[in-house]
Length: 76
Image (cartoon, rainbow, N blue to C red; front, top):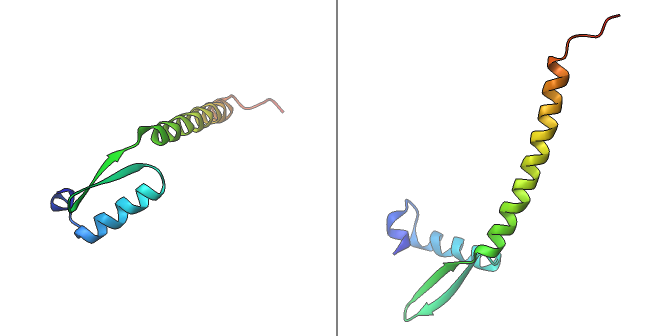
């Protein structure tokens, strides 16, 4: 059981899994009294791709800012 290894109640874990399922990040399938969840990688891959693009853009901006800050002062 997933909740056994976590410092939160079983009910809290269930609520979090329901939120993840509603967001399309996991899929739950009932197996007797249990619900087994499986991670859906596609939405997570899309999120990772989006974050990578944002990271690359910020890296470019920060490099440009660093060059400007380290440039010798212009002569008056």
